[in-house]
Image (cartoon, rainbow, N blue to C red; front, side, top):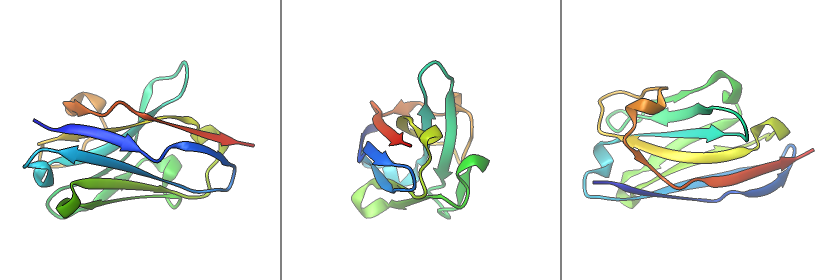
Length: 124
């Protein structure tokens, strides 16, 4: 069983930065793939980034490549999403998700554990 808690969201101007954190409980968290998804009002939940537990290889959706960086500290049971050069279209609720699968997936249906979400608002 894994419980996830996101933090770090807030209001930022376009071009600014935020760092989201996903803190997990559970002894086997280090062996879980962890991903970030986001959902804007009236839109579907979209994949943002994911990181494997084994080789820590990251994967990103195209619209955040070069701007966002996902990383993890297994010793702290925490995954981070560093978001730079933020745009108004990045405004959404950001969710952390985890799965014991071997490799990262872009499908939300492959993740069985979810946090409550943290709001990110980027003003123009």
